[in-house]
Amino acid sequence: MRENVEEKLRSLPRGPGVYLFRDEGGDVLYVGKAKSLRSRVRSYFQRGDSRVGTAQLAERIADIEVIVTRTEAEALHLEQNLVKRHRPPFNIRLRDDKSFPYIAVTLADEYPRVMFTRERHRRGTAYFGPYANAKKVRETLDVLNRVFRFRPCEGPRPGRHSGIPCLDFHIDRCLAPCIGAITQTDYAEIIDGVTSFLSGDTETIQRELEERMRDAASSERFEEAARYRNRLSSIRHLAERQASDKRAVGTVDVIGLAVEADRAAVQVFPLRDGKMIDRYAFHLENVAGDDAQTVLEAFVIEYYGSAPSTPPEVLVPTAVADTSAIAGFLTARRGSRVEVRAPLRGEKRRLVELAVDNARLALESDSAQRAATRQRRVAALEELREVLNLESLPLRIECFDISNIQSESIVASMVVFVDGRPKNAHYRTFSIRGLDGQDDVGAMREVIGRRFARLRDRESDESFSQMPNLVVVDGGKGQLTAALAVMEELDLPRVAVIALAKREEEVFVPGLPVAIGLDRSSPALQLLQRVRDEAHRVALRFHRRKRGVRSMRTIFDGLPGVGPVRRRALLRHFGSVERFLEASQEELEGVPGLPQKTARALYAQLHKAGPS
Picture 1: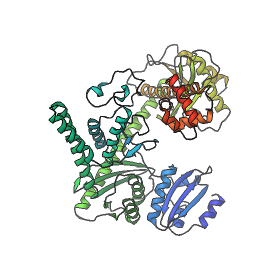
Picture 2: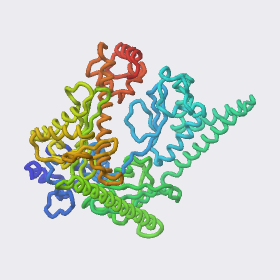
Picture 3: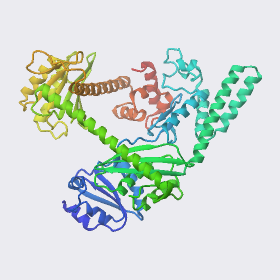
């Protein structure tokens, strides 16, 4: 144990608070809360601690940081914020944690969109929600689109369109701003109506539709009046449903929990007015050795930290002994008292038992699926070893692919599969240098040489420093020969190398005059295809990114006042090359730090060049 850690263990406070374990690089490994910081933090360094993963965590701790709070509930709040900020690798996490859905209105766009999203990071966008049910959000968007007829697609801006509107215009689901069928001012009024409705003003649009319906009927425009009648009916139904949802919020949430080894399953049954309106299922990882209370607390700060509402009562299993910290956290979230309890009898206990049974069933099902998936992966690896005559299972597979379109920006990708699964953190990409024309074999020679030279030179890179059991090159005999020649030149330990040809899915192996033909249903071939397809996807994505950067440089070339720093600022502001290329003059003038004169010159250049 490091001296500074020992010193801090001796001086830990006895009160409640939050503790952070950091590694040698200062990165946060784990965030926890405690009723007594002194006893809780010290427990990680006691020899008798049998919790799985605790020893592994303790070995990596280089520093301890504590934050004292007044209460345990306050500590739970702080823990939630710190876990969200740092995402520590040893903390319990929801494996299938989806953010709650929102409705986004892209107000910064010339003709804003109204759309479903689970993200909340785009500038100039208004977000409404969160909502508890994604299906209802999509139904709401469908009704709003029928009533307001905002554009449902990204669509090109006016002046950059063929002039022929799409089907949505013809079925009265879009006002076709892309062909200039509606002015920006009139479209803005439409969007104002949408945002007003989503903000709770449901009466205004109903009055407007009713007036238009009566006006059309009095003028004997009966088809038009019927359309307004249908829209009015849809919007009234939607408004009533939203009002009903708001009135119903807050009866009780029933939580069921099941824990097994390093995983847990949680089921949430929301009951409103005594009726179960939905069921939410979650799986948690990194729970090894934690008791039910610790697991539930971790779930509560994740789930209710972003949930659309908090009910006045939450029911939990009897295995959770102390609910005071959870109750304090939820009370602060709700703004009024929340009762958290483990019922011992009656209907509420039956509901908790039902939720627990469902959680246990979900955990068993997940375990069975994991076992089946693991079995398929092992079968594929075993078959590869047998077919390719390998000395051991190919636990680490590296695959290389070249992306070369019209001899421009030749790039390569290296993807890594460990134990039959992709290891994204070990993916690498390469820009090919010094090649003229389309030379896939030469490019493969270069990328293999660069990758294994780094292994030979014992670079500290976590991916390049590891020796693969199997190397797969995308291509045929030419690529295979090039890869083998380079590895022989580098005088490396023997590594199995094969080539996989796309057309017939043939496997070329050194020393065999003809390719190996594997059955299409073969687990080994299916694994090789997944690896190859992933390498192709990564290479293509990198190639597109480089082309986008080059397009931006072409546009900026010769433009005074826009150097590398401003290029990066523009890309960061707009989020993508495509979004930047479609920016209006007003949007460019709104970029922080970009002078108005430069913004106008840039807009003129963009308008002249058009999107690349």
